[in-house]
Image (cartoon, rainbow, N blue to C red; front, side, top):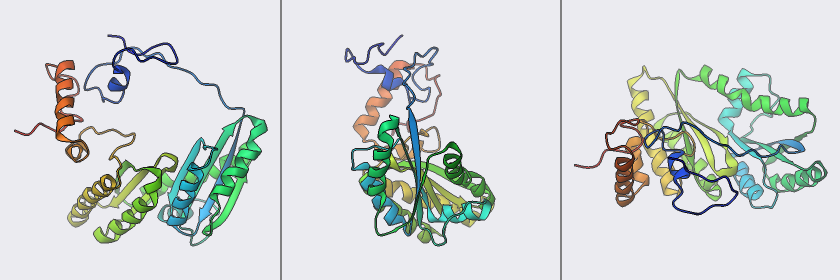
Length: 287
C-alpha cells in the first residue's frame, strides 16, 4: 500500500500515514519513505537562563511560550541535574541554582536581535539569577556543552535509571515539577528532570541501585505514581520514546476501553496472523 500525499495539503480519505508512523512496527513494515525538506534558518541565537527555583523556571517557560516568538529549542534542567553537571564537568554555574533553561531562536538574521529581546523579556522574573546570550559558534557550543555533560554525569551517580519521557500541557509544568519533587521524597528515590520544556516534554530519570531489592521496589512504586500524576494533569505517559513492552501495562490508564478495543481491531485488520512486532504497544484484551 502507499499512503500520504506529495502536496502541502491533502484530506482525501483517512490519514493512514499518521496511523503507521508511531505504530512501532505493529501494523506494517515501511519499505520506502519520501520526506519533505525545510530550508535552514539564516541565523541562530542561544541563551542560557538560570533560576533560583524550579517554579521560577517553569513560570518562565509558560511566559516564553505565551508570546509570539516561538523558540526553536527550549530545554529544561532541574537543580539536581545542575549539581551533577557541576560535579562532573568544568561548567561555570552559580551555587544554589534551582533550574536552568537553554533557549534557542532562529530565523532571518535581520530579525534575530528583536527575537532575542522578546524571549529575554519573557524569561525574566524575580527568580532569574543569570541570563547569558551567545552569538558566536564557540559561545553557543560552550553553552550547549553544559547540557551535554548531563548524561555522563547521570551514569556516575547511580548504576541504573528509569528514564521516562512524560508530557503535560506547558501550563501544567509547574504542577508536574512540584509533584515530582514530592514523589522523590515520598519514595526516597532521586529524580532528575530535563527535557523539551517548550512542548511540556520532560525526561524524568529515577535513579536507583537494581541490586538493592528495597530500592528496586521503591523505584517501581515511584514510577507508578509518576504516571498517575501525569495523567491527572491531562498529560501523556510517552511523548516520543514509544510504548514497547515497558509501558504497555500502563496504556489502559490513558486510553479508554472503547478506544483500546477499536485499536485492537485495527491491529487485527492489518495483522491477522499476529506476526508484526507481537506483544508490543497494546495491553492484552481482558478475558
